Length: 406
Image 1 (tube, rainbow, N blue to C red):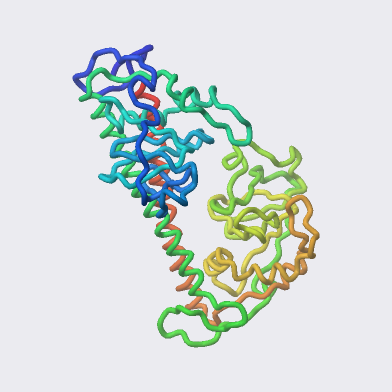
Image 2 (cartoon, rainbow, N blue to C red; image 1 turned 180 degrees about the vertical axis):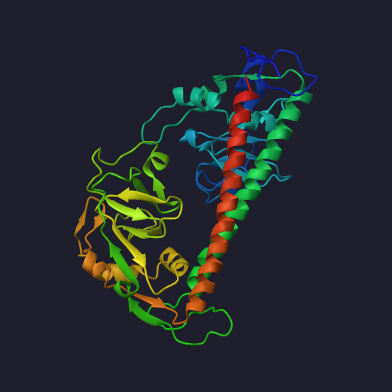
């Protein structure tokens, strides 16, 4: 390890001591090299690359393909997203193929005797991205030209061996991140599939998939019959933690979710919610057209705006309700009581009394409720573990990007 100065990184591999060289990107790589597009090819559009490890494409032919299908890829080429470059949606082409053509929404970089993965990692650093953003034009869709990108200066090690070690190190990190992303998506998709099959569909009394030995029809019960509304106020200010509902993270402290408190300074009129109780946020958002219902699991208590509806379960297995409200089977009931066209500042116009009149499909057997709830709890725990591991390695990568580049 060495102290970071203008041309030596803070951390580097043993055996390397030379100062790094400064060059313009266009000097270490050929920008948009010309190649004749083949008659038939696999076309990679700007919006189709999901991350640096996965590629989505479609078959095209030269005569009917979009005019932006021009960048014929060669193994080792880099493709830099020119539009909205802050998304860092860049790609290293690593296939032995002359049949992939990228959109002109990417700037193609063919390195000149510089390790390709080292160069890919270099252009992902915040320092480089900030230099790009300084040169972007446009507001809704800021973009950089290939000419301006080529002028940006980078530092790189003189020795190819050091470049290769850095590139290999970050490739291992990226592979680990990609594996956790794949596992995370796999279990999320698995959960979605089971949610669709393990609860009865509308106007049906039997789920498609069921645990053995359960054959009784499920029953429809009002929420008010299996839950009690909570309206306790924070008049004595004994609870000081304002919460919000995140569709992905559940009930979470405002300071953690927003990085600040957005609640009023005076929270004496807020509702107090205790661990194990549920809250309904009537705000609709992308993917959650009827809001979200979540249970407080991560704190002993907290406070919520009176716009939330709070309740605690009775005569039902609580974890079953968690799973039920993760599905969309309650959406139809809420839709039927929401006043049509009466949406105010992103809130569904639903009264508390009407909300507790919605009907849920519930197994008669507490044992079946328990098995379903525990099954989804295991899935949720697995998803959370992969999410934590993914975030851990993403943070590790960010830290090394800061320390291992000039």
